[in-house]
Amino acid sequence: MNFCSQCGAPLTRRVPPGDTHPRDVCDHCGTIHYENPKVVVGCLPLWENQLLLCRRGIEPRVGFWTLPAGFMENDETTAQGAARETLEEACAQVEIGALQALVNIPHINQVHLFYRGQLQSAAHGAGEESLETALFQETDIPWDDLAFRSVRFAMECYYADLRRGTFQVHTLDLGPL
Image (cartoon, rainbow, N blue to C red; front, side, top):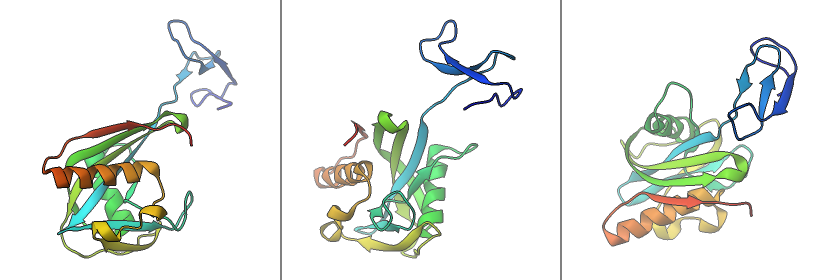
């Protein structure tokens, strides 16, 4: 940020009094501009014994498979965001269930939340950000062609929990590759 969104004056990067982190501060009006992590929300959309995946049609990782997920919007819960992303990316209606995985990715300032979700029908299709969608049995998932480590973690935890017969929330802190 170069200019204050409140008054338009130039910003100075410094640690404000009483703070511990450098911030963009407006010396003209005193506004402190905080930067916070982005929240990515998504789900594991399930139909019978199958998981719905999307082949990405946008960067990053165009052409790779992923769970439907994206940035949370203002004025929605994380579960609402996960359902919205499933509808937008996979043209599928889903009932969001319990949280499956929380992944902290501090080096890119993101937190990823993945819920288990029950598809309302087997109907699905490619949304604007997807090249295609498909339902996969666990043995048919293209594990080597998954787009993101957080997605793989959420899926591996889901299948481990399914085999164990009990579900829990899993957490992971990811660093740079």
